Amino acid sequence: MQQKTLLLLICRHRVSTSQIIGEKIYERKQAQPTSQPASAAGASRLTFGLLFDIDGVLVRGRMPIPAATKAFEKLVDSQGQFVVPVVFVTNAGNCLRQTKADQLSHILGVPITQDQVIMSHSPLRMFKKFHDKCVLVSGQGPVLEIAKNVGFKNVISIDMLRESYPLLDMVDHNRRPKLPVRFYNLPIRWETNLQLIVDVLLTNGNLGSSHQTQNTPQLHLLACNMDLMWMAEAHSPRFGHGTFLVCLENIYKKITGKDLKYEALMGKPSELTYHFAEYLIRSQAMQRQWELPVTSLYAIGDNLMTDIYGANLYNRYLEERVARKNPKAVAKMVSATGSTTAVPREEEIDSLWESELALPSATSCKSVLVCTGVYNPNAEVPSDANHCIKETVFHGHRDFIFDPGLVEPGHIVQDVAEAVDLIFEQEKFVPQ
Image (cartoon, rainbow, N blue to C red):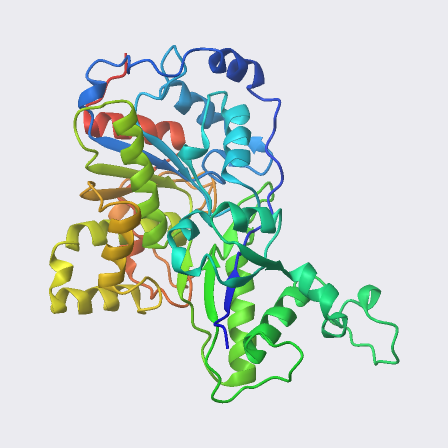
């Protein structure tokens, strides 16, 4: 029997960012040449790059955060070129990278390319061993186009599955087949995806057969976006698709008595996502012919459990990368992440990254927390970052254990403009 793979493309819904704010500035800068050498004095000698989260750092739902415009005025020169390497790292996944780049270009008023954007699904292009498999994708937006864009060739959507097997989708009364069935008062939001994904898992992809809960090998599962919550216009955070994963994992375990296992988890805080971001930073520096390798990354975010945890976890990887060849170091890393399923095994990481992206040149990834999003947006900036985070409930994914050190930011600032000022000061960088 041909091996099947179930791919979960978990994409949280996002409202479209404004295409009006900054449009005239963007059009003016877009018309400028984009292949000129860097204008900042000493820019060719810089050794750092910036990783920006989007929601809660640059925008809140439809609206830009005012500090974002101020920050990006310092990050581009008079020709509209970035004076430092910049990558936008978001756990959104309901559109293509080019679409998100276009949205950011309009809202920030600066030209941004798709090579500066990482969606939660972007690292899937590294999983070439699955690209020829039959995969089921679940999420919002143009999921078939997204899956094919990252390399998958044989793709099935939840809607295609539902149409082929109409009797499997029984919760939404409006879509039920007209049969004499009893009505139950159940929610109608996520039930179709949860029901059909569980069906595929428990039938090994053979939906014409009944569930097999015993001694059945689980299909491969790739999941993107682990955010439990994210920040929109509401005063409090909203459910992210980490909440969907919590539902799926608990339903699967309730039925089978076994833990749902993942081939890999992508999106922040996964190391795969940060390594992909480092690769894009490195590529920008090479294209601009900046002389020195990028050795320091600064990750700016608003969420302790994704942005800060992920940056600190990747920093730990960078610090221990050479030592990881030692069995004791491997055991330490497994203890730190809480599960061998959170990231691929050590030899797989290096072989995967080396073959697809080359090993990183960065030696550190420093976290910067802003107070305009998920993290306590109305609080004053604490004076000491080492004594301000008192998390007692871990909002991270099941396969990433709570480590207080990983949710301690390197710096805390009020907003993204202060973050850029701080980083320039730390690096003694003065754009001209």
